[in-house]
Length: 106
Image 1 (tube, one colour):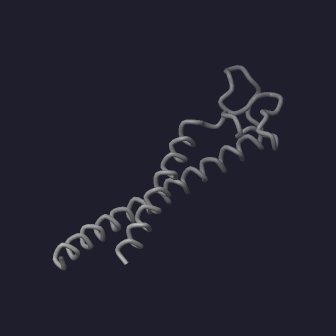
Image 2 (image 1 turned 90 degrees about the vertical axis):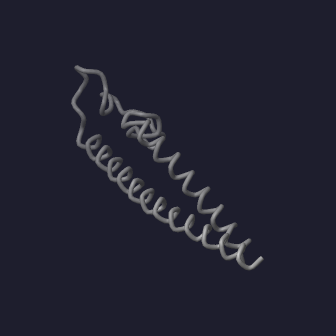
Image 3 (image 1 turned 45 degrees about the horizontal axis):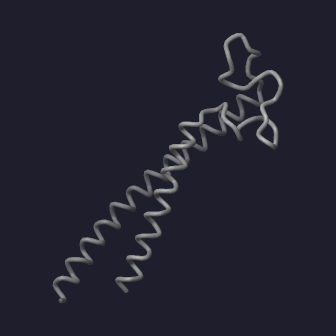
């Protein structure tokens, strides 16, 4: 049973690490990065994108909507990350408890 719990802990730790990396990447990439453009291939439509150089065309309604959705996704990822960190704390507590019980039994 302890081996199964350890495997689950390792799996959750890997998932948390992957989500933290993804969140970090999303924060670093900003709104004008590759893959966040207007077209299905991630290409930036004519006229620029949000965050374009000063003097460029103002953002279109589609750009504003895309930016809003990106912010919502980042917020959702941050909320998931907070939940995962809380779970990590619970898992660490269980690890300590299991280690103490194992030591007591041996």
